[in-house]
Length: 313
Image (cartoon, rainbow, N blue to C red):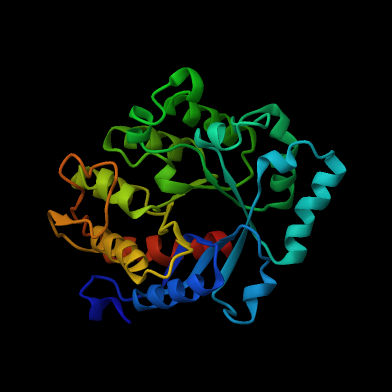
């Protein structure tokens, strides 16, 4: 279904640069709903199944990312690590996915952890990815709201500024490795856009995606004029993404994410309630969509051209 038929301001193809497959039946539903919102292709992060399980059914519509669990790879010897990374291409993966966030401190409490992306013990891993020119989709930090609540114990979890600083060290250390940072670089908050802009200016190997809808709507919508100006200025560095996880058969889950983001990027709506719960604001009035009404040329980059240049589909 075209953007015009949906009442939006863009009628070209869309690439979802951040999505997950957890259940095959749910993936079918997610793909169907996404197609109604103009999504023709996507980056799909696989947690267990291999690309071969989906290639025939969704031929030409998927770019595959392998979720690399750092706890499983950090102890491998260099030769074994290189073999492990090289097996990705053989299996059909072209992107590596990594996740660094304070939540791992609790999830893997019984294991010695590497929670710092700049840890020198990860140099070999990132070095091999850089040598093989395998882009990395990476989660480096969480919303400011999390650090004020669930991560309030800074002694245990650290601070967001520290986590972003650690990632910047990694960016500098692996300057020939392209990083797509999830969630607008973990800095969609209006107060953080200046720092993200500084990073864009300094690191040519950095781009960001726009998942998740509630985080983008909540924070970018707090200062829509500033957010609009920022995205126009750095329009070549931002990729559309939803962070949808195919694990539910609730159609509204997918519809809510796609409709919210398209309203945010393409329209000038004001004060439209987010069509699903935002737990970070449910006790303080809720989250509302304030559209940025991005120019069509910018929308073309956001939705398709930037991903095409990065992933070569």
